Length: 211
Image (cartoon, rainbow, N blue to C red):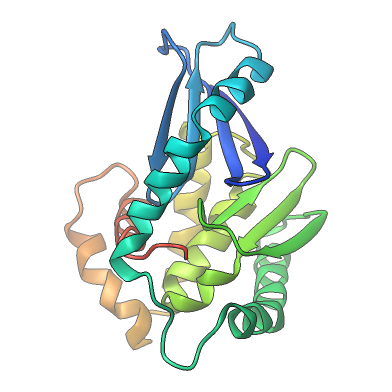
């Protein structure tokens, strides 16, 4: 499976995915991964971009419906205060993860994106959504480790999932005594998914929506 990130002027970062089993071009909105265009392997990315542009209004409406469940910012917060907090906190934490696990990224950008929580380009640039400041710390860490894992595995294949699960297992083992992390331990232990930690954290993140 091959993937490429396309930045749309309205929708933000969109994942273009060439899937071997795809027989036609399709568009969907995922609560965690954002807008995804799936296409057969032989279809050029430019055709996928043109299809996205033809369905842009539908995708935008779907994103708005997905965010309607919590369409208000916390009391006392604004986009600018979230942006300031994100710029003050996230770069150092992302760099700490990169140093600990041996990753090297090119540039970090804090964005206000309604389609996903983060992305990693083929050039090694990472984008993080300022709305991460609205979710619990373990889920913020999940997103950052997710994007760092893409530096080694650009797609969402088995290698990527194995890498992310390894990173999360090590990270959670360092925070077993912290209440914020312990809240996720029981569901992880009960999960029957192949990648248990990834599965539980992704499910938890679905209860939040970028605004």
